[in-house]
Picture 1: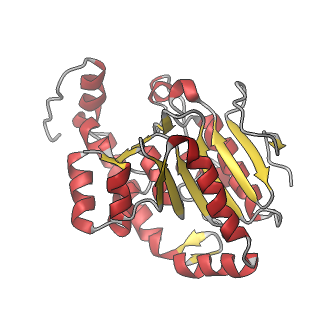
Picture 2: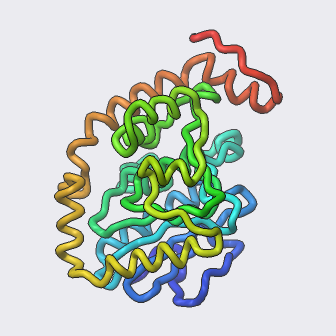
Length: 279
């Protein structure tokens, strides 16, 4: 199976400077590694297109039975959207075609039958946490942190975070995290059921691969059908999320036009506390 824009290898993981996404196949497990360590693996258009295309190819590849998503290095799994790219006026999401329907990073609303595992090798804040929420399972390093700090910048977690977090951890705890923007560490994430395993930093990928291999040992069609039923996936769409995406998109657009949405990034850049006006 060809994965557009990337080379598939069975070699040990190694960063390739010019490649936004490293794709490796380990028997029936495909490892997708966001490769922007200098930007803390933040998501730009190149990553979005490469990751989205790889996920699309996975669904049609019978040799792949489970997928792992991780980031290069040990500091950051994903820092969310690339704010520098946004500041330059770049779009992070394609505006036309199938790619436009796949959501943040080409991943958060890109529903496939193959089980997905987030191997969280460092900080996963904002969009990073939303990638974890969009994954079926998660393995985290002891130094990983999670959170939705968007409210501190005058915006909302628009890639599924505001409705998926309350569905995946206790609702009142989710609201506290969403309303305060406070982060949690890996052990707390494990207690809340946000992740399946917490291991040493140098064991994250190996643990995720072992978990994926245990899935791959089972009958693939049965596993995939089980996921589709459990998540209500019909023709690549999660039926129960359709209206939630509409509401989230509408609210996100309204908030982004507010004065507060402009004040948040400005205050951050100027290293001062924001002055909110609720306008």
